[in-house]
Each structure stands twice: as C-alpha cells, then as structure tokens.
Length: 228
Image 1 (tube, rainbow, N blue to C red):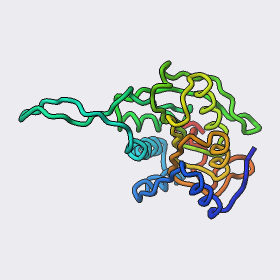
Image 2 (tube, one colour):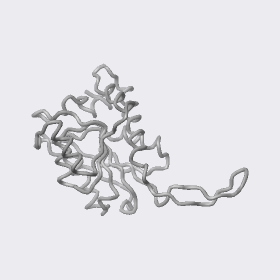
Image 3 (cartoon, rainbow, N blue to C red):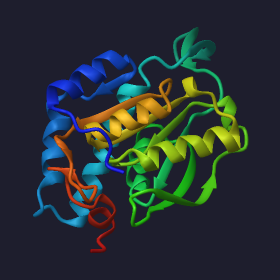
Image 4 (cartoon, one colour):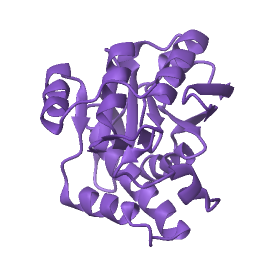
C-alpha cells in the first residue's frame, strides 16, 4: 500500500508535530544527496556517498549519548576524562542497501556492533523477512537501524517489529535512519512505532503508484550494488 498522500507543507507539519522525527539540515549533506540522485553517478561513487552521508548522520544521532568520567594518565598528569558509557551500540542493516550505511557507522565508531535484517519487497509492496540476527543482548544497547530508502515504510516497520519481538528492545533505544524518504512512509512508520526516533537525510515529494520515491535516486539497492 502506498499510504497517505500529502503536500510538502502537510508533511512538514506532521514532522514538526511528531516531535521525534528530524531531517538533516546541512549543506554538505544536501550536496552529497544531490550527487546520489544523479543517474550519471556510478556504483563506486554511490557507495562512497552513502557511506559518507551515514557517517555524518551518525554524528547527529550520537550527540546526546551518555558519558562517564574515568581516570586516564596523560604524559603530563593523571586526570578524569569523558568516555562513552554502557555497552557498545549496534548498527543494524536492512539488507541489502543498508550495508553501505553501516559501513559509514563503522567509520565513525569502529567498535560498533552490527546486526542484519534481510527482507525483500513483494509484488504488493509489502516486505518479506528472511533473516534477522542481532547481538543477543541488544535490549541493553542503543540500536541505529539503517536503510537508505524510507518509501512505503513497510520495511522499516517490519524491521522494528522484528527487533521488538525477537530481542525486546525498547522503543527509546532505537533510531531509524534513512537518506531518502517519502511523506507516506514517514506517516506510516510514525503511526506504527510512534516512540521510535527517526533521522532522515531528505524528505522527497511523494511515492509513485508503483512505490518509487519521487524524485529519489531510483532503486538504492541496484545502484549501490551495481546490479540493474
């Protein structure tokens, strides 16, 4: 199902009202997204761009993670310095395209754990899950769920549902991250999981009748994998 159509103004009002949906507002990110859109951009460049954008998105979503003061000895003295506290977070790829965003998360935070959810879109545009594996103690960690496209919202909804059911991860420990999004998918995801935070690279105009983000970048999985 395509979902609810709305104007740009209505979409922005919905995002503002949700309170936990953010859209990147940075000229460098906007530039990189425009390069991703360009049909002339090749596979290698698409992969690099997705990775770089995810890196910058990780900077945004980690600004408020908890810290703890620990003793450290510098060449000059002993002091207390801030370090990340708690268990390492998890970057979750929605296969296949999400793997290129996870690479950016690993660049930003090399010790990050990873998880994978495999699904494909059926003829009626609904997702079918065929694989789901995360760290067993994911309920004790922060999860960054990554898919370049938030189109109908079906894959994101299904992935978050799987994570909740299989690993009992609370809503407040999950953030859904997508580079491209459509208003229809944003609305569907928020209504299904209203307490899960969302970070988006850009909000495009609408979904076409066959489920493509317009103007989008085409099929992200095909362009990033080089298979068309």
